[in-house]
Image 1: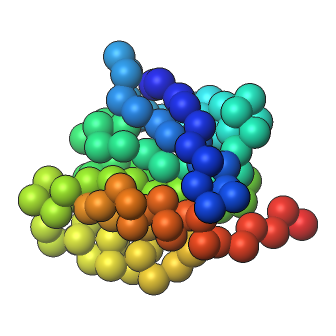
Image 2: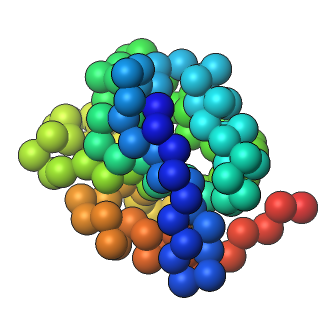
Length: 125
């Protein structure tokens, strides 16, 4: 993974870009959460390719585990993924459900993802 910081509307967002290895486990996600401290960020924006294909297959439970960890650490996150690359069926229903909340959303547009993340009021305690 490659990390960089985006300062957007007085919010600090950790941008996660695909690197040699995509996120395919809770442990790898915890490395990303740790990077938030290093970059002094409190929200995460994942670019397309940041997750392994297992993330998009609900039967692997990876998406649920990752969203649970993000929720536990109170780190809102967004993923940029073109509509045509989103699986249909149950995963699409999952996207519709998660996009109603304020913990994790999937966007097709980077600017919309940054604006949503920046608009969130984050409470740590």
